[in-house]
Length: 100
Image (cartoon, rainbow, N blue to C red; front, side):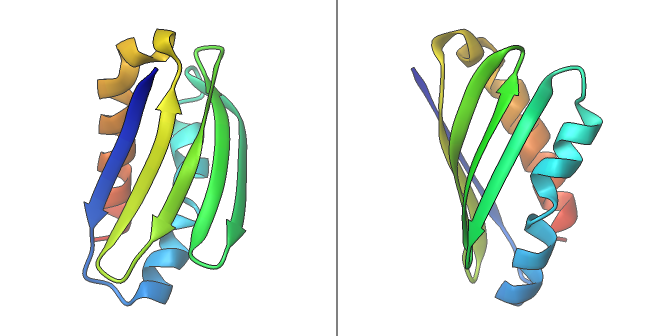
């Protein structure tokens, strides 16, 4: 299993960053329909648990929106580890755009 560990800095007030990040995975799913489906997010304050399928494999993890950054952590199944770079790149680029 491979570890997904993404950190994206921001300079927004935490509440504004949280508001923007709450739509991040839905936007990524919409843009990557051919790769991602069955998205689920459950928010509790500035923390969320998420899950989705990518290329038919399940991925789950957590999102945390802090004062200075946003972090996403999760475990990638072995078969998805081959797509780790692409998954991280797509999420990082989208998060950076949302938080700028």
